[in-house]
Structures are given as C-alpha cells and as structure tokens.
Amino acid sequence: MRAVVITAPGGPEVLELRDVPAPEPGTGQIRVRVYASGLNRADLLQRRGRYPAPPGWPQDIPGLEYAGIVDAVGPSVQRWKPGDRVMGLVGGGGCAEAVVVHEREAIAVPAALSLDEAAAIPEAFITAHDALFTRLGLGLGEAVLVHAVGSGVGTAALQLAKAAGARVVGTSRFAWKLEKATALGLDLGVDATREDFADAALAFTGEVGVDAVLDLVGGAYLAGNLRALATGGRLVFVGTVAGSRAELDLRIVMTKRLRIVGTTLRARPLEEKIQATLAFAHHALPLFEQRRIRPVVDRVLPADDVREAHRLLEENAVFGKVVLRWAEEGREAP
Image (cartoon, rainbow, N blue to C red; front, side, top):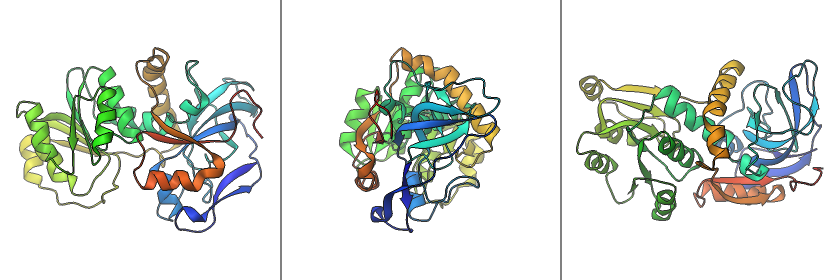
C-alpha cells in the first residue's frame, strides 16, 4: 500500500509517498481501506520531529484520522463486516491506504456524508465534543469563547456549542475566517490582531464574562482568558500553537473560583479513546444525519499533493480542514 512517509525531520519537502507493507488485523481489530485522511497540526509537528507518535503507532507515517471501507476483520470482531463505511481516530499512520484499529474505535459514517467529508470529522469533532461537554460541562444558554474558531477544532466546537444552545464568541487573526464562521452561527467574531478579545467577551456578556473558554492557541492568551471568564468559569487548553508557557495570576483564579483543565486525545489509553468516541457518536451522529452540523472541508487534495496540503495548513491558508484523497468513492481503492 502507499503511505505518506516522513523521511527526516523538516519542512514539507521531507514528505514522500512510498510503498509500505499493509497492516493485518489482529483479535478484535478491523482493517480499513482508507479513501480519505484528514490533516491536523499534529501532523506538522510530527513532520518536524516535535510530536512523536505514541508507542505502537508508526513514527514515520503521520495522520490521526481516516475514513474508508472495512476490507478485513480479525478474530472475534462482531460490530463490523467488510464493506461497511467507517471513520475514526488513530495514534498515527492515518495518511496511508490502510489502517488497522480496534473495532470499538471505529464510527459508522452517516449516510448523508461522503467519505471525503467523513475524514474531516474524527479528530476535530471528538476533540471539540470532549473538551466542551466532558471537560467544560457546557450547558444550555451558556456563553463560550472559542479561540482559533476558523480551525478544524474551532469550527467543530462552534457548531456543537450552537447545537447545544450555547452562545459563541470566536477569535481569529483573519477577518475572512470570522466571516465564514459567522455563516456557521458565530454570535460574535473577534479579530485578535485588532481587538482585545477579553474586552469583547465582557461587552458581549454585559461585563459578566463568558462561562467557558476553549483555547487552541495558548501562550499569551492566558491572561486574557482569565479576564474574560465569569466567576465560576472554566478554561480548557486543547492546543499551544502560540507557546506552552505563560504567567498565571493565581489571585484571579482564586477570586473568581475558576477551573482550568487540559486535554489531548492522541496519547490517551485505548479505553479512554473509546469512551470519548462513543460519547461523541451517541450525541453528534444524529446531528450530522439531520444536517444540523457538518464537517467543514476547505479543500480535498490528492494524496500526491501532500506537500502542498502541509504548506497550506502551515500557512493558515485554510478554513476548517484539508483532506487527502487516496481513492474516489465508488471505485476500488488501490
């Protein structure tokens, strides 16, 4: 099978498509013939040698999510059969023509969606769902601030929060991304290059503050997050693209009785990933079927153009997700 291989740490030029052995499913596992793979910032970091895959996953093949068709099942598999359309998360190796996963990690692709669309769902939407509802406990009518609202996780969080009856303030460094997010239901867009997001969030809530913050940026955003939060507010860190260090004023945390948590999906144990996947599937799959939420795909590129895909993502030139296509749906994958 073909796979994207990181030949050495570096820029997009280190990526090559190579033939590698296809994996074989073991007990309780299925093999999925991948038709499309979603790209994530974790892939960029892994390519640069800054985010190794967890033990047991390929270190030289990036990719955290896939969509495709089951083509083989291991012993004791009961949930899936060859021909089923599935999508899901992997710890690595998703940018390839086949992946092997535990049968309980796979999710049925909603009938209303193509496999290209499905490839843009797992990492963004499971991360956002877990952060908003499991970590933050977001409730009906609450206000949430979502940083980098034009990203994959950001667009997913925006839609999930709106579907749950929350009000959403979103930030971006690009006005055109805020315009697109507004079309998805964003209540207030804040251009982080021109406005103070904490001031904007406070004005939006009548100086009360938002109930929750989902931070995909990190770094210097911490002080503004604390100021933007209402008393009893909650903050979850999901990404650190602007840095992983910042000064914390404990007096604000204590006075406002704030709760600060962090989360990642990639390195979690299998059972925790399965639980996050099942919670997402139970709540969100009907919303996809009803078209109340949708995957946001900026563009679909052939796997041969993986270097260009990485470049676009690295330059923040996309809204939502970039997807790599390995095969046309309705045709046999290689």
